[in-house]
Image (cartoon, rainbow, N blue to C red; front, side, top):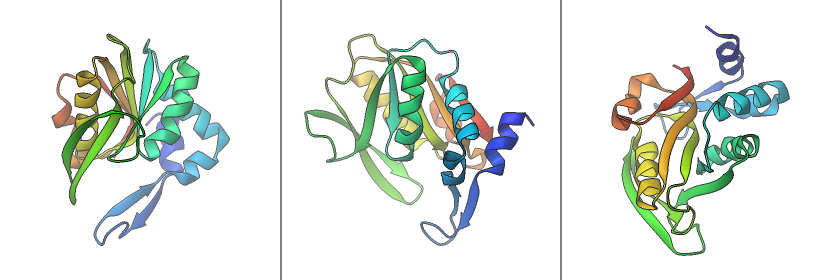
Length: 172
């Protein structure tokens, strides 16, 4: 295991039965509170991609994506839950582990051909990431890749993202 992986895993707290019974929630707030770990994670997520925009997925993805955008010299674009953006939007609905949801992005968030890196905290079933890929492509931009802090391999989210460059800092 790499030094970065160890640093990340040592700073993620497991919270049983949150948000619903039977779910083991991965709390990243201890990692975010550690300045050395946070800088290491932001640098690793920024990686080697040459991009125009960084997309952050609501809500914890915002926390990581904004500093990744700064580090990358790119713009930041939020992908939000339905009804949270003030201007004209594109929307995409998808299924969750325990329900369904709809994401939106502003119609004018990207210039044609913008290269986009999608950043999120956790890849679970892949539904949110796949919906975000579809929104970005419908808006006329190109997916450079997806970068996540942690991938929950047992939920097989990677399988829904065939053909997309996916980088996970840790896989559990």
